[in-house]
Length: 127
Image (cartoon, rainbow, N blue to C red; front, side, top):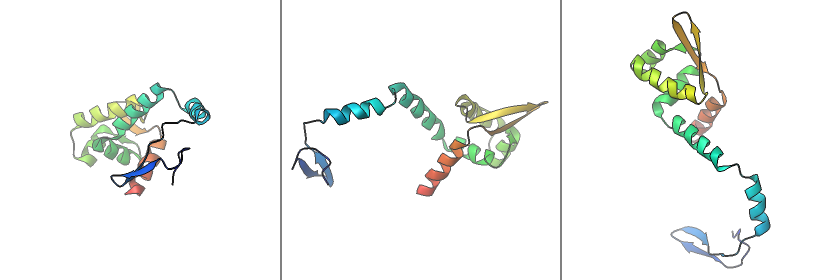
């Protein structure tokens, strides 16, 4: 199906369709441009997805989705060192994905942004 305003400009290239149209629809372009967020929003989103792209951080989030855990519990669950887990938690805290509550000498980590768990679940459902 040709979504282009010019007729007959679509040709098959390497099993994909490509539009050779050089004409634009200025009304559509202007409307979409006005609806697009600023470029800086996409930079922050990209950084956010980089944080979520690490399998270790995803495993930490999965564990935390079950309840509040201290660093030592997370390290034991993931078979990692406390130092390595702390490093990953720092990244997650930076993006307000997890929060920490100190209780004496113990720090308990929990999910701060539950939308992240929904994102993870939706992505897992794709596979």
